Image 1 (cartoon, rainbow, N blue to C red):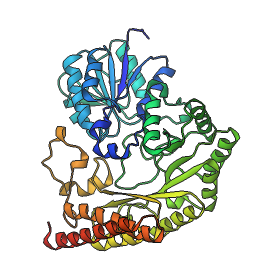
Image 2 (image 1 turned 30 degrees about the vertical axis):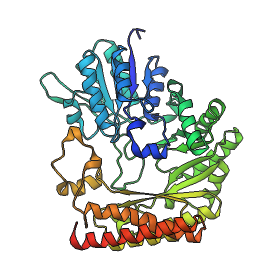
Image 3 (image 1 turned 30 degrees about the horizontal axis):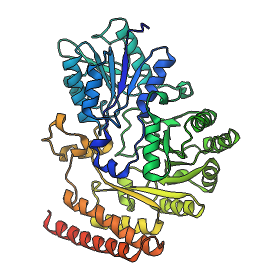
Image 4 (image 1 turned 180 degrees about the vertical axis):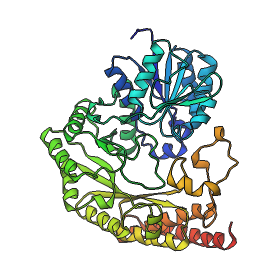
Length: 469
């Protein structure tokens, strides 16, 4: 490849624009584009990565203006969509000869819109091989016709959209190199974590895809599949990270870390055999947990595991197609805590069909299971998911696509959106009040605040329910 041919990967997430993250301060590097960068380098294609996390839009504009790239590839998700659209417009105005490629979870079901917004090529699904072939084509002077490349979409000069055959997923993901972490300022991430939490953290991925069918979850990139790197390869990467960066903790980004018990047992052994042990946290499902799994997690260094529940109501769990028993979730949270591993769980309110009785069941579920941590979100429909299909006819149709994201979508629920906003505060404070009593985790003043906030929001919920406000 000619040394004059230049490729750039970037995203569009700015921590200075994210008020919630500024309070939490737990930023993670953009693993997706670091994998793409490593894949291209493995195929002898030099590339740059411009990590925007600690930057801002003006600095990124100046960076693009002062550098001539032949291809700029931008990762796109719900959080970055609006900035990505600004990037595309800016690049087309100031670097008209540059080929703009978009990929990531938000593009798959919005191909037409992104191409009309100025993108030249959309990568649909897993990006490594498709991105490599796009760059190779551009390097050979092809900038308009990509019909010979699977797994993408592009617009022809006459305005018609061409969508090529789907890309076959990489079966042997052990062949994918480690993320190209040397391309970004890892020290900045580690410092932010250390300064704000006393411990540094990094991310790793061991698998691609998820075999489960939860209706609210997007599988736009890796599909409903399960492919996993070998325990040996994962342990080797951990050892390399430990040697080069020595983080205090690791966050495994996989959807269901304990899906394979055989893999987990081998992983625990490999980590200890290679002196690669780093305390880590991960996500799983209660039906993929048992006493053996808990012990293997402990042996491997797990200090916290997030066990998905989404609701304390079995009715809602079934509507989500979660395929798990709420009692099983409670049991595994309790058993995991008894064995010295912290637990976390996720709750989603406002799912179609959820009533006040279901919310009360969720409160009781959290009190009984007593996780160390829990997070609560209000359900929103992501395009391409089962939830989106179910509520499509009930959605707000007046959103301007270029000025909104799927998070702005709302649909007709049992009660008003405001009701569920108050419900989030009610559940949070009611459970924290209860936990502060039984766990002795807060002083009297904090307990009193939890109690008051719980009762106030519970009262407002009742008024909103009665008057539909």
